[in-house]
Image 1 (cartoon, rainbow, N blue to C red):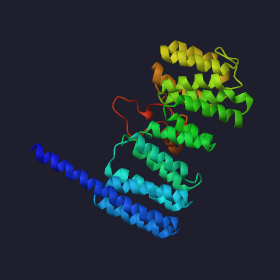
Image 2 (cartoon, one colour):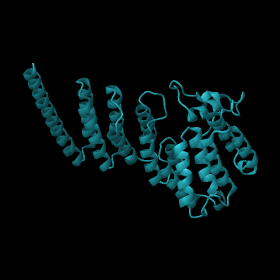
Image 3 (cartoon, rainbow, N blue to C red):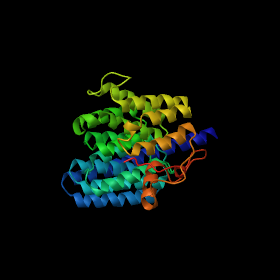
Image 4 (tube, rainbow, N blue to C red):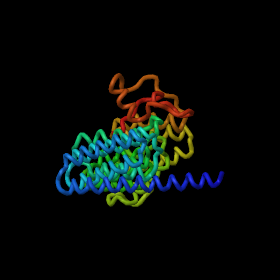
Amino acid sequence: MMAAAAMAEQEGARNGARNRGGVQRVEGKLRASVEKGDYYEAHQMYRTLFFRYMSQGKHVEARELMYSGALLFFSHGQQNSAADLSMLVLESLEKAEVDVADDLLENLAKVFSLMDPNSPERVAFVSRALKWSSGGSGKLGHPRLHQLLALTLWKEQNYCESRYHFLHSTDGEGCANMLVEYSTSRGFRSEVDMFVAQAVLQFLCLKNKNSASVVFTTYTQKHPSIEDGPPFVEPLLNFIWFLLLAVDGGKLTVFTVLCEQYQPSLRRDPMYNEYLDRIGQLFFGVPPKQTSSYGGLLGNLLSSLMGSSEQEEGEDSPDDSSPIELD
């Protein structure tokens, strides 16, 4: 019995080696085609091989060939062909129901970083990649993929999109460093406190208390225009500091007094009280409002930015509170 199992294993290893050798030979021919500038023919051959491998159940070979082909086309400035093969990488992951793994997320992020930032293909790719990375849970995508996307967008100085992805990661420190650069390069001196206040409130709305604390501490320590604290010169920063302490304590009276005392600072952005309504529900047991500030299509859109289409058991539904905008 053991001998038969050993023989089967050896045979499987030989077949695997033959398959890898076959893929490498095909890849060599395709690479030579691209190097000669026969982009169209090479692209069509990649597609043909992809569907052939998929029909034979060779999902790993199909995915690896498409990934290496995408990188090759990117290196030759063939954005459309590269983007098409990148989408086939995703198709192989979806159809094979592959489990999420760090190396796969890094490959997807690598492809994303090479795409033209203004191309519609990039938008379609990232949407589909995030959906796959959520593992069918209906969540907003894997935190590690969000982090990798955020880092690429930060390098491109696309701070708004970078901030969105950092919010859905667990990288509070990276988010803070990006916000320092964003504030110093694009913001007004009078708004240094607002950059981090918004991020902290939004992290708390997403129930990510740890990242909220890290982003606040890192930002206030590293921003050149913020003096050492706490306490801080800026009242809004003191409010955020007290709020993070109150969240740890969970006492509603402390939260209520805090919000009342700092209303002049909180009125600087009309969204602050929306965020605080949600935070009150999540951390202090405040009942949800009966009516929402937003309604109809706009309300649904804002709700979709806060929550997911499917909820895990034991989690609050995003519909139980005012929708929050996290753009």
